[in-house]
Length: 160
Image (cartoon, rainbow, N blue to C red; front, side):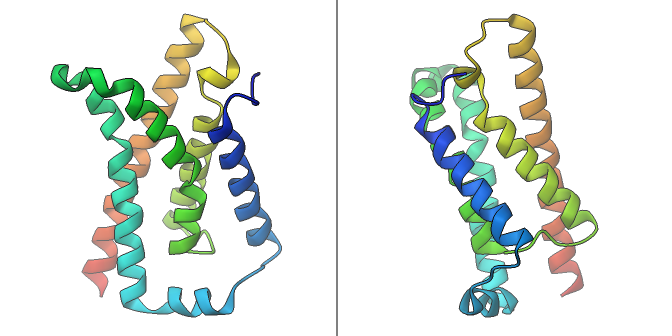
């Protein structure tokens, strides 16, 4: 495993562990907690988080749309760095992980984030089976997160 050349993985792991530490130790910033209780803040921070999730799908487009393939390597680097920052984006929206389907969404979001940190550049393995398994898992979890995000947005606006 090569971590020294993968700064986005190191940054991501630090941010993920920082989020988990604050969550389990119940460390909260009062001013941010109060903001997160406000309806307009929830909506705007949720929009930001949704845009982040949708933006992460751009990498798939650069790999599949013929005209965009020349941008795939640059987009992959951006994808990794933006993914590394995802615990901050989540934290801005919510210090907690919620209950019920939101807890499940949070678990899947962070599991996929962790899986993304240990991408094949980090694992340094040329196994075709590992590549396909990793890619299928990462894309499948990303799809589940996206579907659950749409469900969450629908529930928020339906019941408000």
